[in-house]
Length: 246
Image (cartoon, rainbow, N blue to C red; front, top):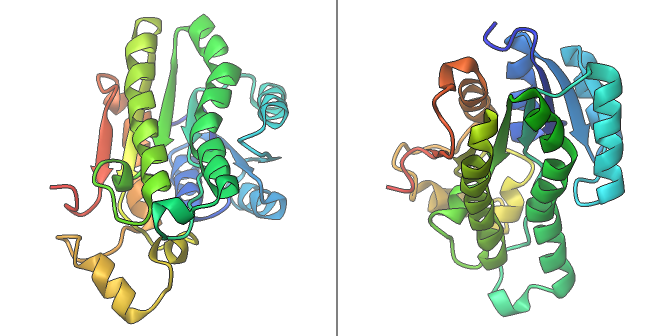
């Protein structure tokens, strides 16, 4: 019960890494808001794990502000904010990515961190406590070809994590990130372009431990970084990647 009596929001919490983080937080005693653009998925996950559901578009200011209002009504305050929601564009030469896809990637992966910070940091400052966890990617540390703008968005997320950590540390707020390698989530096919044995082998050959990350790998790392066990840890972008970035 490392998160007993804590309240948390997990964006993109209806599936993949986010769902595993929701489950592990609930197992450790937290009350969790499952926030996702997929309303049915958020509702289903919240019912399973005894939390609160919220339909949200993390790239839209009005939607994020509504999420904050719901969180205040349902939970009083938010101890832990996990910025997990994210998307990618399909693998292709950088100049072939459409402007629409570029804008959407940066809106969901980057602007969302700005919007949630505006919505939740003031209350954390007032309470002199809080934890923010950003789910970035090894793509932002060791970029893969043909995922150029996705790589850049996750590199932005790592830099944002460090600068948030430096600015907010005096107020008792910790900010960290996890950098997953490609994992068994709904986004895996998008990263690879096609889900074939040959393409899987190509990706696996870059991971020294020889397997894709599993949602539980992220859930375990998230519990540690958001618990009091990590009270001296801030500004860390932890690679949970089977050694890919070595």
